[in-house]
Length: 231
Ligand SMILES: Nc1ncnc2c1ncn2[C@@H]1O[C@H](COP(=O)(O)OP(=O)(O)OP(=O)(O)O)[C@@H](O)[C@H]1O
Image (cartoon, rainbow, N blue to C red):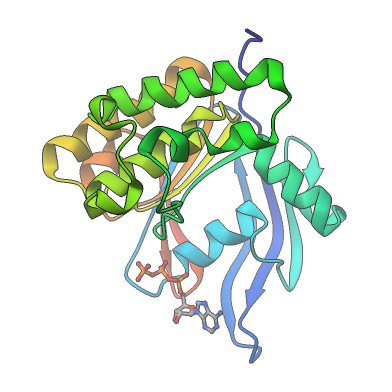
């Protein structure tokens, strides 16, 4: 199997994200994240954390400014190229899990096989199974997604994001529907993924235990980064 791709550096400059009515939702004049490092984004509800994460993933096109991963400026990519870039390089763990209800846990976690050449499908399916195991769902591979609880669905979504072996992982409250023990286990795994395998990790979280495990904590308020603390 090919070695996983090393994490990408993030470079943000002059970024503003606006609501359709023109209201400014996020404003980040400058932010760099070193490849392979891990960052938590914290702050009160409505501070713009999810908005910023969406702009970093290219799910939202900013009103102005630049978001670049490993030197690739997302604004320079057309819609199809941006979708491809996100699919291949960024693992997204978002709050709406977007599972295929009629598929089993493993088929959901390994859904990216549909986009891969035949020769790479088995490896991805194995990684999906390994992540389900680590997240405590190893025995549940064939159960339909619609039979899982909220916390279990969240873990399937995490396994899906990581199965693709992406150099960048962006997560929005990945531990929100988990019990304390599962949340702590996932926090350890996410931190290790960055530290041991060089992935770049950006996580929006209210979970102080998770934030404490990461290299750096950004605090947002009213759409801006107001504090930047290195652990
Ligand atoms: N598409 C949109 N149109 C209008 N307002 C929006 C849109 N998306 C987000 N907002 C507003 O932008 C602000 C920031 O929202 P965002 O979801 O980024 O906050 P957050 O810090 O992630 O909050 P939470 O912790 O509650 O998830 C909020 O006031 C929200 O209502």
